Length: 179
Image 1 (tube, rainbow, N blue to C red):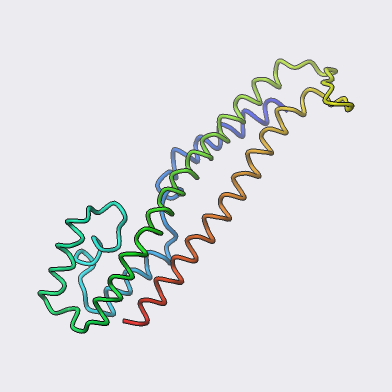
Image 2 (cartoon, rainbow, N blue to C red; image 1 turned 90 degrees about the vertical axis):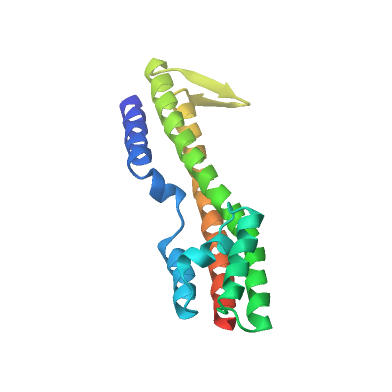
């Protein structure tokens, strides 16, 4: 069993190394929805991106909004109001980006838990029993239980992250249709 846990830790480590950018990045359909917005409104993506990105400073956001107004890309007051809603949606985007970073850290913690569980399991004797309350549990099940617990936490967190991104994308598409 200990070889299985250590092997799983190695595989997860390889996944983290190889696909770290994909793990930390947005779903493709959300990114495409943002690009479709700029194409439909005939706005260059580079000019609208500062308005939609959480890490952009407020000064750069104002400059981007000013440039769009000067070019008369945004012609009606309604357009400017909706851009304001996009800016407020930006806070939600920032929260989701931080959730992606937490997801990466959780996967890293799961990898470490597999390594540690495999190592601990290697040193536990086969007939070792641990008494918890009134139940005697085989010692090798404790490290496995910890790995399963981490895995369930990661699945729940990933579900929450996906629903938050879906909500963001739906709101974004709704605003895009109003423009």
